[in-house]
Length: 213
Length: 213
DNA sequence: GTCTATAAGGGGATAGAC
DNA sequence: GTCTATCCCCTTATAGAC
Image 1 (tube, rainbow over the protein chains, first blue to last red):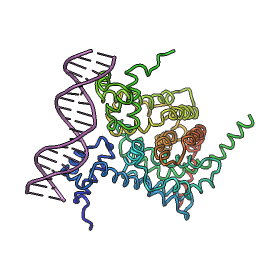
Image 2: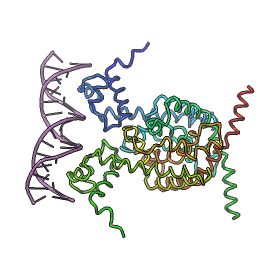
Image 3: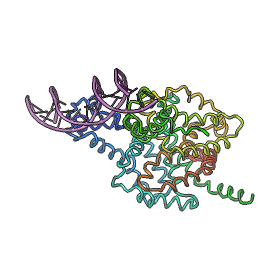
Image 4: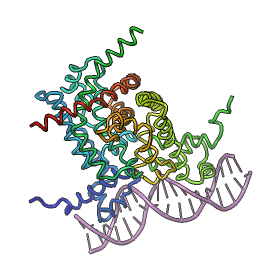
């Protein structure tokens, strides 16, 4: 039995702030908004978190970690095959994104607006480029820059959530059906990734055709 | 010989505003920023565009059209095959995005923050769901919701640009190499899309295996 | 820890002179 | 068309009472 988090004032503030920052962005969110949302006096926010910017920094670091850090262990696990990594990544990430669908757009956009947020200790570059995943991809298809496959995999996982604002506000799609489609993707993306890896032969054919012409 | 656009005050303002809005977002951009960037007096911005919100609306509609409206004719062309449509879409869109790499993240994010911007006359829903493209996709693979393939295609095209802030600010990748990779994708994505369409048989195999178990 | 009151400044917008 | 000066509101942040 844990004490309900919402009872603690500082957490009530942080939760409300996170909700508002992720939906409206940093600049469009005021301390007054946060105070109203969390039903707390404005002065208390500065009491607990010193400043709006500091509160944002804390939330941003949390979100960044939620979004990126959880995948590093999967990428680096040397005891799993490429196929197992992809399946694990797709399942965990889609499940996570169904719970926090606004997180990718929020984090990616704030990083664009203010790249200094990326000066985190997490060294993405080394972690990703020297990962077991990249090695396994290169072993499978050495002719194509492995980054292509990273873009494809992450794109297939994340992009539907990036497009969600367009889709749902235009009533193109109800929320229920969106979630159903995402669940279908859990087993479809691994299949598609496998097909994409094996497109190598088709590229060879393509090269041969253009060569003999 | 056209008169250089930059000489006209109202255009100077709009160009600067577009640059600032797309890089910093609506709320983080002040009229004073725009005045400084375009080297005009603050009062002139309100003289020409009445209000910050109105100026933003104009820029948003322009960006939205640049990003979405150009693809509608391609999707609806009944004289092209599915393969030709994909090739045309990939080439035109990647070329366009290389010129305006920040546009997707800007438009998609502002749509999330303020969905009222989407109340445009462009009825995306009908235009897309009744397009020739969707029919051709369904003819090719009737077992899977065609939206999956739309997500995959658009994701493979657009997602690298969404990830760009993470990639370039972490020095993961120089701009030159990024552009080179995008150019490689011009012929790779059509190949991959073809492989993905033909994954149908593999899904059948998958279903058979799980059924006989 | 929580509140009220207020300081200090930045924001959008406009009136009126040129 | 362009500028200066200014209005008025909303913002963040804090001092000080409880």
